[in-house]
Image 1 (tube, rainbow, N blue to C red):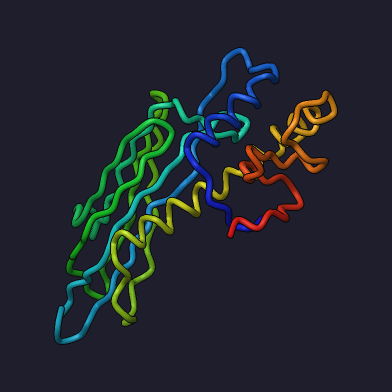
Image 2 (tube, one colour):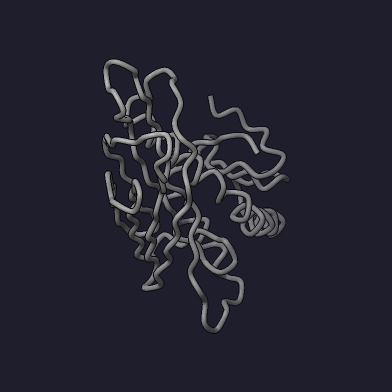
Amino acid sequence: MPTRTRTVAALVTAVAVAAVAPAAAHPTHHYQGDCWLRSVQQGDATGIHFVGVLAVAYAATTADSLPAPQAPISATCDVRVNGVVRGSVSAAGLGLAAGVASVAFPSDDDDLVEMCERVTVAGEVHNECRELPRPSNQPPPPDPVTVLLDLVNEVLDSLWEPVDAAVCPAFRAARAAGVPGIDEEGDVYVAGEPQWDCPPYDIDWG
């Protein structure tokens, strides 16, 4: 699916339209996202230290993988070397938790480097650790803001397919009922300006 810029207001509108479907009696919240480490060892400049950016971006979802913009979510990502925390980033919010931090840590070839995440969404706690491949010599990581925005966009883009599957049929039904500003594909326009693009995603957002 093409990358499309969406607004928080559009997301809330889509979820509101999707809410006309029957809800589960006891919905369980889930999440989508990741922790991301971009680091580099720069030989004589940093020695055994790796210097880079640690980012976190998680979006709350329902049990049906639809966005849950009102669900409280918090997340912490740690870089651990042989079990010792060497860098951390935390974030919290409603529907989305995203943050970025600089990180620097020493690591020899035989050290165990792990990324450990703790995500709490709607009161449910999830913990996981995974081993990281040893970073290699590479160009310096990008600006922290760029890292965070790229990760947030990746997470949010993964949510649009189930949203469109829920709301685009509703938009097409509304068109059939005579609601103006909606074309046969379910694309929504206000004052001639596109507001929502349904499959086959042929709106040129400019």
